[in-house]
Length: 300
Image 1 (tube, rainbow, N blue to C red):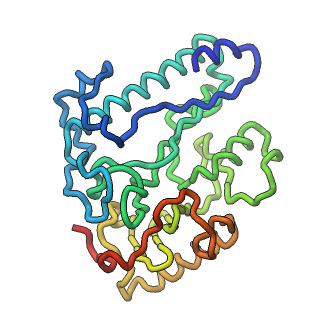
Image 2: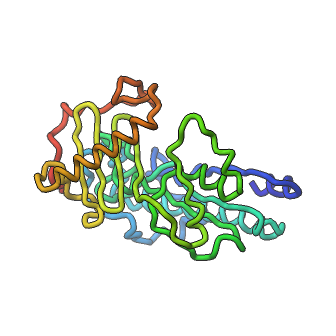
Image 3: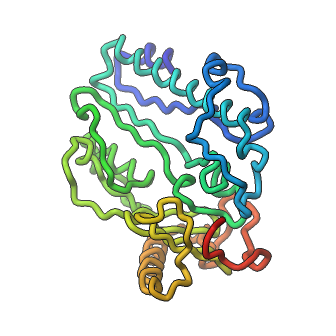
């Protein structure tokens, strides 16, 4: 990446850079870390990795839960990514390109390391899950002189919002493709630290699991047999108490379900819409809820 920047510094460039770590899966995670950060983490307890019993739905990765070797290896790999990002930023500054370059740091998926008794992503459970830790990804945008330092925003955005936002930021909003219709929204105004008109809701889909997340609620639906879930996330951020069968929350669930279906009726690709006879995107075994216990009321 550094060589690419040095080679193309005289003209506009686009660099997409992915790292091969941290990767919280596979047999290597049971082996001691070997990078230069391993010693730093060798005796650390790292409480950001909660010690929990594995959740009954966790299908893979049970050997990593509460495993100090796995936890410290993951942390050391993450510090390796920090090294790499730092080297890229230092290169831009050294070449005098930092104020003319937009940096966007994010990830392809969420991940949990013990939270709720899970390890990994939503497809490492059966049924496929949609808890916050598995959905949330970092999102940092940087351009000195244009994006104020230490600016933060609490609005709910999704990766489908990135393309219209970046195009608008670059004064290329008219280049946003019109077909197929995108659910993406432009939040570039928030990068200045100013409030913008915004509806706090995002949508998620993985195979037969869909969810709507607002700043107060999350509703999760699975086809064809469930189980479905409803969480009051503003009061229950750990998503411990499923309210789907609570009579006093029936209207809330009904309203969120309608919004979920309205979104996917508009934006889903019919080829992969499992709700309407489409096929699998990934050829994973689609969960059949008839082989597990009924939906839980409270996770232990």
